[in-house]
Length: 323
Image (tube, rainbow, N blue to C red; front, top):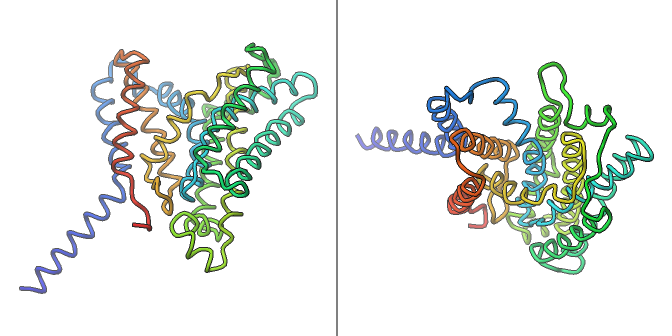
């Protein structure tokens, strides 16, 4: 009897663990079913609306990959929105005079340089990443406003817009393709490579990681660089999708990126991260925004709702290996 009871308890524990591990997918499915039922007459299930959700969440999903890496290593980058805007402007200005290749190189190189600076402030100057990237956020935002005098930079190059978010391959948006590629690469790096294990170790127990031969500071510095590159890609995609670059791009994205990453299951304490979970978190937020719009909620009410979602996500965030 005792063995049977222990076996039953063991099975229950396994089931509970599986449910907890897959909770994010169940939540997404539940939200989808609720909206599908109550918004069936407002076109929620239409192919056009579903693709719109993916378009609206694409840049968030892409930035969430880089932010997942950083948060897993127990670091933050609060400057990502400013990097998006600034690199978008740099890309658009270069595109107008020198063409696509140099525009892309200039934008990515700018994002990379900012990542190098952010990493240096944290690794070499020993500044907390929260404070360092708040400072660079303000500086970059000021430059973005200054170089264009608050004016948009229009983009008329159709080849650029088709490649970077404004086109389609058959019925599939190029934004969707960019998202899948970045998420797939990010997932493989984090889960299947030695560098991914170093990221987990650097955030989970940096002292033990150092004793095992991992250069924790170099790992974190590289992650800031990767974040800068990914944010600059998001800037190019914004530019391509909206046929212009503006200093306001990304201004509200940090809020949503953090929410997507934490909702997806990445620990705010470091040591535990999931790129696929960040994608699901992004889609959940996209569905919620889309559903609230179809229900007739105002933008202000949507912001309030997202704030509540973040509070809940942080409260339920996994504690990571440290605890």
